[in-house]
Length: 148
Image (cartoon, rainbow, N blue to C red; front, side):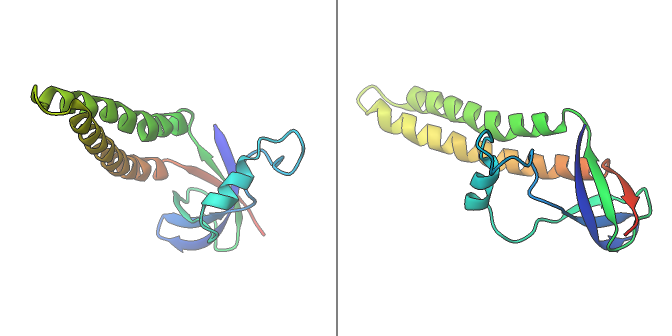
């Protein structure tokens, strides 16, 4: 189970908006043996703080520090969906493009167009699918608070 510390920034009904504390990851980004993924996220991700909506089972109040946990397998399923679905549709689109090409027409142009179409469709499907799954996951996240 993945866990992170966060602070409650807004409570609305039985849910709460939380902002993660720290940079995430293992905390060894600046050390010599660290993988540097935190540095990459600083370079490519927006600098504004991220907010997540979670179920507030512990009854935490605004300003409380909480531990948010994510069930096992959710992150892996999301990564598979976000990476493998577009890749698979890219390959299928390329194959369909070649199949639709006539005998006298360049197969490469059709393959490239089909692959691009498949990739775009894969990203769109992954985005909508992850949004629906994200809502279901967010409603199942457990919080426990430690008063501040």
